[in-house]
Structures are given as C-alpha cells and as structure tokens.
Image 1 (cartoon, rainbow, N blue to C red):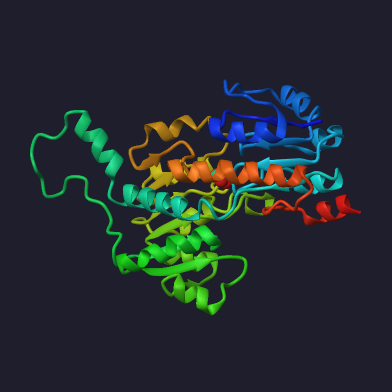
Image 2 (image 1 turned 90 degrees about the horizontal axis):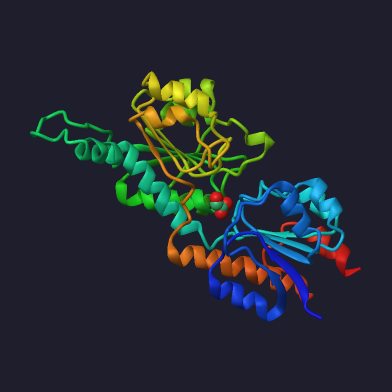
Amino acid sequence: MKKKIFIARAIFPEVLDRLAEYFEVEANQADRTYTADELAARISGVDGALVTGSERIGADLLAASTRLKAVCNMAVGYNNIDVDAATRAGVMVTNTPDVLNETTADFGWALMMACARRVTESEHWLRAGNWTKWRYDTLLGADVHGATLGIVGMGRIGQAIARRSLGFDMQVLYHNRSRLAPELEVRANNARWVGKEELLHSADHVILVLPYSPQTHHTIGAAELALMKPSATLTNIARGGIVDDVALIAALRERRIAAAALDVFENEPALHPDFLGLSNVVLTPHIASASEPTRRAMADCAAHNLIAALTGALPPNLLNPACAQKDAK
Ligand code: GLV
C-alpha cells in the first residue's frame, strides 16, 4: 500500500506528478490557506508532509501526529519548524540548502543597488508625472562601487554576495558567529571579520543574511541603527524579526539612515503600514529565491528529500540525523 503524504501548498504540477508515483497524495493546488487546526488535522493523518516556510510546524502538532515520519520544507530557512520537538517525536526534518544560494545572492544585490540608487523611488516619481526637466540634483543616491559592504551572516549566501563585490571594487567586512577559514575569506573578495558594532559603524551598505532564531531576534534594533552612517543603506533578505520593523521605520523617517530594502517582514505577509508611506524603502514580497529555475530546483529538492525519507533512504538534507539513527534501530 502506498504511503500517504500531504503537500501543504500549491506546487509545480510536474513535482506533484512525481510524488504521486510514490505516494497517495493530498495536494492543495488551490493554494488554500489552512488554519492551524486544519493543517494539524491533515498532517496527523499522513506519513510525510511537504511544507513551505509559511506553515508553522510546532511541538503540539508534531506530538499529536503519531503517524508522521518526515516534514520536508521547501525553503533553506526552517525557523517555521520546531526541529527539537520533531526529533523527540521521531520525525525527520529537511530543508533545501545550496540550490538557492546564487539566485538569492543576485536578489540581495538587486535590492541593495535599488535602494542605494533609488531605483523604485525614481520610477514612482516618474510615473507620477514629476519628470519635467533634468536637474543636477534629481534623486541623488549613494555609490555602490568602491564602497564598504557589510555582510551580517556569512554562510553560503553571504559568501556568494561577497564574491559578487569584486567587480564593484568594494571592501568587504563581515560578522558571523564563527570566522571563515582563510581561503574562504580570500574567495569572498578578501572579506574581513569584524565585530557587529564595527561593521555597522563602518559599512556603507549593510546586508543581512543570517538565519532567524530567538538569538537573532532583533539583531538590528534602535541601538544598532544608531551606529550606522546617515548615508548608509540596510538590506534584509534573511527573515522578518531579525530587524525591529518599528525601529527601522523611525530611522528611515528621520533619515538617520539613507534607505532600506526589505524582502522579509515581521508578521509577513502583513507589513507595518508605515512602510508604505516611506519613499526611502524598497519593498518586495519575500521573493529572493524566486527565479524559475531555482524555485523548480527547491521543489525538486524537497520532493527528493521526502521520497528518500519515506522509502528507507537517508534524505540528503536531513536536519536531525539523530532522528534517522533512532528510526534505524
Ligand atoms: C526563503 O526564505 C528560504 O528560506 O528558502
């Protein structure tokens, strides 16, 4: 008899077809938003679930889902899943690392460039009919080339961002819990490890690429924003909650920093309404990994992990190997 899986959100039809070769599938191609109770009811009746970063898989749901063996996230970040509780419940958890590194780094650059050079603000200004003549000081922005780039969180995506800065003749500072091996620092355009305060104080463009956890909650709040240069920009492609949105709104409004670019928000997809009234912020709807090939690669990777987990193989991106070992006994 085929094992049963639940796919929490709409997915590429080819990936659904592939999973249906192995499993009895409950899909959600209508992309309904389930309540927590509806989600729990569906997950408790299956052997495996393919979810996205939008579904919260908490301890209660995991403890109640006695049939469940695997939760496969279609995202590299997995702060939506209580991995410790999953391990206690004997549920394997996987994510989709690596396949999105370069695409996400590209988008980090797109946002940083957009806010430094006021691209979206310029377009809004033009569309509103304001462009009647050339002026020497219209929409002046900050240079990116030759500037100091500050990367907070120097994992694979952070390093991919740093590598791109070579062509812009930038100096790279980074802050991470642990220093990179010297050869990786060289590859990352000779990135130099500094303390968080020094980075915020020195960088012209700060970009956040660290995972969200209780320890990284509000890594950037009022005190950190106060350390930044008034001419600096801040780009967040990591997770909402890493930045204190209310503190950032105040800093942008009072021009204590020049501009920000945000792909992620506290409480997304709802965003603080005051962002909408600010001209010096670029806003995008959590799409840093959203190129066609990369989203396909992420869906394939999540499906591959799920097939492995439920057919007795080791999922390539298993986050809680202790759980697989326990299962194998
Ligand atoms: C996107 O935010 C991801 O974690 O993959």
